[in-house]
Length: 132
Image (cartoon, rainbow, N blue to C red):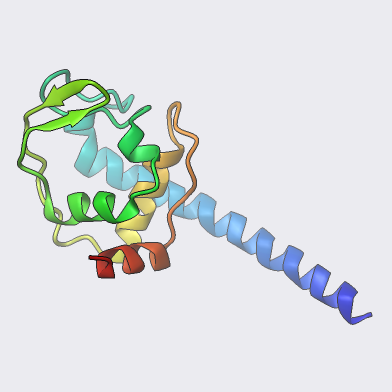
């Protein structure tokens, strides 16, 4: 009987997590539209030789969340080679972003367009910030 209670509880928690994720993705989309879209474009395609694309980018869908968190929080001003192309426009830092903001916008970017990566939790952002 306890097994059934645990199973039902797990489904309820999972259902709640799915709802929260949908809400967080909507928040991430809003952040993207107000802070990222100008440079990375509505389709995530970026601007050739200036602003790196987010759609289909190996960095975006990869496993190095700490790097993504550092770039979003602190910006990036060096020329970057990405998937065989070079991009030279500096990315503005976002020091005002809370951990939840970073998780939401990364989740939106990693699951939008052709990207099929996992969502990012606030706990993962915190862990990434503490990673050296």
